Image 1: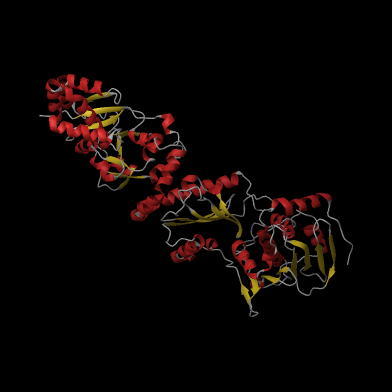
Image 2: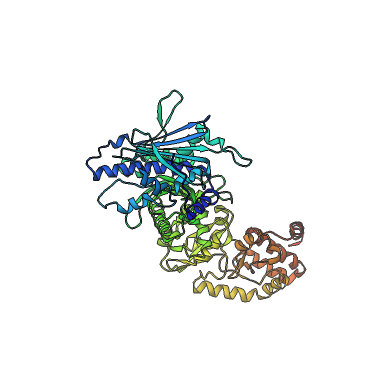
Length: 619
């Protein structure tokens, strides 16, 4: 055996760093070694294209993995291009000198279907995370002599001649003994190795084989990823089965997005839009992100930077040969390539959702019921910056058939003289439809959006308008729905009821900004509206915040009376002949209006007593 050779000082430091710091997940050592074996097969195939003397059957290229529990070894064997003495010194003796990188740079553009996954000298040394000794025996194509490389880590390595008949490489990892906080024995269990191969190397292009108990060789990996196949060759059943198996859903997805981008930045993506939300989707436990592959090798389960929060419901994967990974291939470098992929995905997801909305409305509404709030959060959290991206994906119930409508559909139905998009907030569609203000607006022929989710009104405040049409709450501010004759009639009625309006305002001065005759009521006697600014719905939501009592955020209230309702005549008569009852009347009217708006009343018992008292005394 040849003398022991020390690693160069910088290589020793890098090796120590690789073992103890860079690789946080010891499981990936097998991924790295299998990736290198795949590289070797690729290199042999490429060499056969350039050198006619090298005759190979590509279908026979493969990788074998075996476990010897008693000897505490894992062996990875390939029949790829192999290494000679120089290759071993360069690729294994000098850490981070990449033969694969040099090979990749030498590829001619006309050569297709050649793929380089690993980088010798980087991934190889991940073996020392789990091994106290690594042995490599290799024979290069067209070489007469095989060589052996052996190392126990930072102490150095030995390279010597060896006996090996066939071309290729055999890497043997001598697994460490267990220590207090690390179970290395698990890597000697066949089911663990099979599981790691399935997780990380399922889409290596060459068969990864392992002996079954009865002695037959079994191929463990799928080899050809579904997303690498032509879309025309994949059935929808295959997409759906892949989705359900890979992402643990019982239902078919609402939409499948198979995307292949070639150019300066190349990548393939296979994305799925679920129909229903996972049970923890709206909790902190849910993690967004896409699975990330590089040339079919699994890199990361949740690549968060590939999806914005507004599309966090999307499941799927991205496979790219162009991502800049750090030397451990565990951590993505934050660069413009990653951002560029994310931007392309975002545009594609939006276009596919629009397509689903227009071509299969029922499925889209099922999806929207599950994930619509996430789209709305995306509008709110970005302060409206994602308006162009998301606004046409949003649905609201409306007074038009009480069904979901898009804002584009609402605007298309607007009356010629309508300047604003009307909305009202409530706990349900039916409640919104029965609100006093809704009756008048519908009677005038205007459609109303019914906002039934807490976030809805905040979203409209952020986006402000749609197609230059501002949003307008029907129970806030002035609606300006009346013609000149109606306005004049209100003016006259206000003058006649001036005394009772002033009296009610005085009695409710601690609760309302004003008491006035309404321009928005039709048959209902009374309603409560707010001034521009904080609305009743915002008050309800904000009152649930932890520091709500300290903030004391309230909408400014205005009590409105219907000038055409008999109640106004009764109030005028009471003010003239039974003014002592007006305190209770004012209080009951205010509480009644609060109840209609879904606002709490301060004293329910007092409300009931005053109502009973009035019923016995008013005549």
